[in-house]
Image (cartoon, rainbow over all chains, first blue to last red; front, side, top):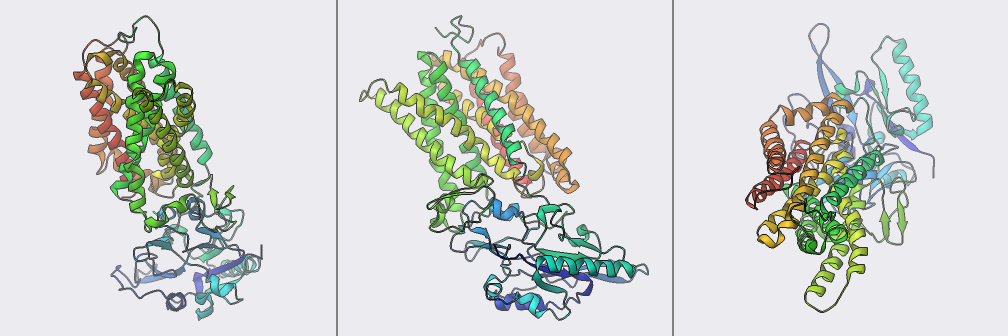
Length: 260
Length: 312
């Protein structure tokens, strides 16, 4: 396996220009969508089958009561322990040699199980193609030595692309810098490979708690306890089977209701 | 609550969950009656086996027409060329793949095996009854035993499948597989009882045994249902626990308490106990028809409400 690639999105320098969204749509040939009213500057509530980079405008009030925004360009996290990949019954979802997660459109049959298994609501069903899709980490660019379209186009370097270990170092430096400047709420989300989901290969620097951005505090791999669940299932099956055996066993006395 | 997406599975999928559970339960009853029952209980083996096979015909079709690309249904089991990094402990043998952490993949394999066993068992019964073959008992026993195990698997895997998602309520409802197995056993047995009760007095001995069995299954269903809610309450996070509240005190609470718990679980339990579960049954089939219909309705509602609340 090649060295793991990653994206680091530093929300502290995001200006909400949505150039990443546009670059993503252009490179991946994703159709335009009618923006809906979300109550603020954000164009749509969440990822769609045609929006794989999504800029969030989280509106809050500052101490003076004036509006302020947390801006965040969200993307598929390419989890090291990926719920969608484990759920996929067909093997369409696979890990690339770069450590990212991609969906083979020639295999996907549109069962939508992965949609329910993603802890971030990333994977989306496309009614047109009958298949699911999401950010591919521009696998067709990265495999040719180019960076993903969103990272390439980002004018403020809010989106940075590179080897995971190097980017993680950069992220920690940036966090220390912000803490030194007194931005105490700044935190890294998904940078730690010992953390939830074995670390995210698209990780973030956030300026508030993850929930504020609509991200789970402690994302979990939903398949992890599956063998414990299976134990409960097996135990119940044994009980139900024994119940039936007790009921059907020939006792000869006729107390079961007139047999013999 | 974090931003999540729903798979938007239609009612058809829930109908499949119900049918496949009923098939597993009915087949279990057929196998137990065949091995542990008396000669008179052959009627249970017959009704249970045919019922399981019948319930298995529409179910998989529902799954296939719900796919975004129905022509690729076989990708659940085999693909021309899969990547070698398709998940934890995944096994690839030629074009086939087995993914132990994907209940949908394992369930598809189990469905195939269960369907084959149900078919062979039904065939042996038909051949014997039509006089074309004699004493196929050993073959039936072998396929029946494997089929009973696979039947429990196909009854339970939809519950495991829901629990292994990131959806609110489902993700913490870890004993859902256990619950679906109990519901499958109760509904499968109830469906057999309903058919036997129409058969007249010669099946009354077997009918009493089926009643006893479904009453036990119903009691297990009640205990596991409590365990599901305990798991959700203890499992956190708050947004997932709150979704369970839709069932206990929210917009689904009337259907849950009134339908799934009182009408579908407590009422048939009370009927059976009053009618002589502990002393030996007294009365005729009238009560059986009522109780088994209540169990079928209750089992369907239990699965439907859990299915709906995770996608709400």
